[in-house]
View 1 (cartoon, rainbow, N blue to C red):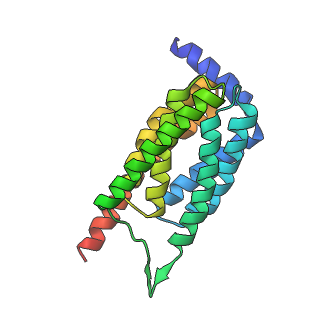
View 2: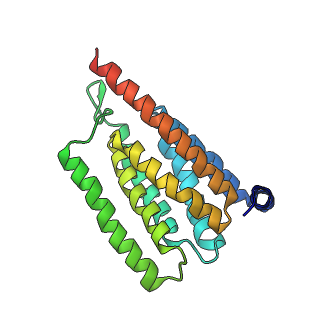
View 3: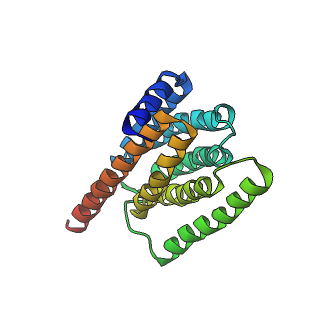
Length: 208
């Protein structure tokens, strides 16, 4: 496909974008921005964005992106979980400061990825008419791990988000969700910035 054809397709799809996509786009971008800032507002903004995204992936996409729908419902549940833990404090310190995963947390994260990869792929090929089961599975499974690590304020969450976003970009483009394609490009950029910002914050606290 020529660059001019890609741009024309992108332009037409932007014109056809629903209000739900625009609102979801704005709130999800805000959520990642707050995550980069290590601000608890990552969760309330994210909740609005992912609930609308779940609606779009199920009711607007043809065929529906089942794994992405379920994934955004999972985001909603993990946002409640993360919101609770991010606001907990021991004396004057947050219960979960920024840190690297220990060996156990790495194993749990990778275990979540492998478990959900098998389950999601099986569901997609056996129970749905999805025509992108592999990409859908990879986006969802890496994001499951990323969301769990983020709730624990683990540095590795940004690495998992980078991988997930790299896969989500071509998937959403193929499905014709041009605004969401742009959103995942911005997510990728913000994930890189988030990793750098959290690393600086972590190293500064170690030096104190």
